[in-house]
Amino acid sequence: TQLLEQSPQFLSIQEGENLTVYCNSSSVFSSLQWYRQEPGEGPVLLVTVVTGGEVKKLKRLTFQFGDARKDSSLHITAAQPGDTGLYLCAGEPRGSQGNLIFGKGTKLSVKP
Amino acid sequence: DAGITQSPRHKVTETGTPVTLRCHQTENHRYMYWYRQDPGHGLRLIHYSYGVKDTDKGEVSDGYSVSRSKTEDFLLTLESATSSQTSVYFCAISDRYGYTFGSGTRLTVV
Image (cartoon, rainbow over all chains, first blue to last red; front, side, top):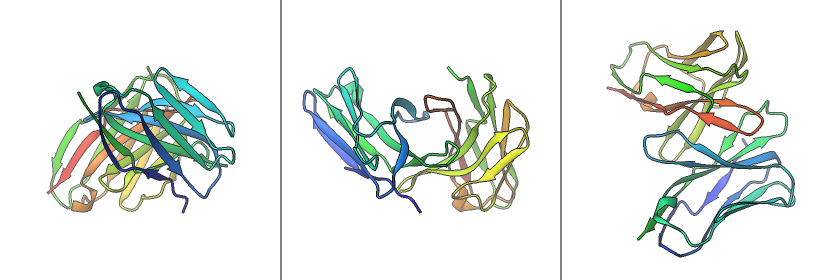
């Protein structure tokens, strides 16, 4: 069974701090996606990375795909209370017909 | 916006009863998925569909069946609901960017 290990599981920080969330696996993925989920709603896609070593930026969020396409990280600079939510990474195994394997998520709380 | 609607949003049912959850999409996407989300387990794939009448099992398919008679509708049926099937169920479609999820159905089996 392919697994995506996401860490940390919980993160509580003050507004203005930086943070990094990690997503690791022993498997190679065709692509890796990051989602953000708010209570009572479905996950919303933030970014998809497909090339080893790729870095994508979305305002204060920076996403990186590992060179070997087995791991990824999400870095948030100067976190805001509006960043609070559940962050999920999801990997697309090779030949999976688009099926994704999800990490268990990182619950982020940013206090004013 | 992929226009995904799940119904019902909330349901309480008794053990042993059959339950059907509906997912409706408006943009003719070929691939549709059913996931369940549980604390400590994250999102796990139940079944998926790659076209009308074309479906396959996911990681946690036991006790569930699906049907897709039209492109726009993907139904998830719990044949005989059990307490272990209490969960939040999400439907999703995929396109070249990634997944778009519905808002979920919170199912409680008592």
